[in-house]
Amino acid sequence: MALAATMKVLGLVLGNFLDKPVSCKARSYGEVVQIAMGRTARVLSEICIIVNNAGVLIVYLIIMGDVMSSSVRHIGVFDKWLGHVFWDHRKLLVLVVMVVFLAPLCVLDRIDSLSMTSAASVALTVVFVVVCFAVAFIKLIEGKIEAPRMSPDFTFPD
Image (cartoon, rainbow, N blue to C red; front, side, top):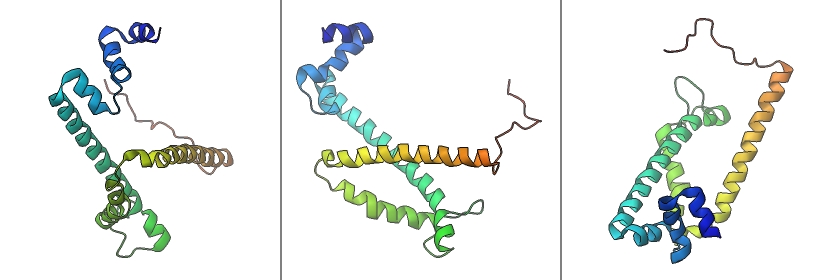
């Protein structure tokens, strides 16, 4: 019954491909790709995953460095908390985060040990969104901020 429902929803090609992990008892995405398409496809898929993850990591590090350190356009979190000192430089902050927080994660034998950390990060993200929404809503009600308005000279592109 489950196989028929899978094929009905996903179609023959995608349903067959996505049913592989169940039928071959694969423990990782790489194993599924290897069973379905061979060892070369597995290596290629793992290289693509590594490149994608490295790109996402770089983007997060850039955003974090911009938020935590000051620039000409804005005051960073460390500048507000501790004043403008030597550690308020973007490159130094990114280096410290990589060495103190990310490097220890690279020495783990199994990624399964991060399951609770991952769940906590999702929960904290939800809490962050709720708190931001609540603060913005309260400030909007109190009249301390205005609702965004469209500029009078704004025109939609053709």
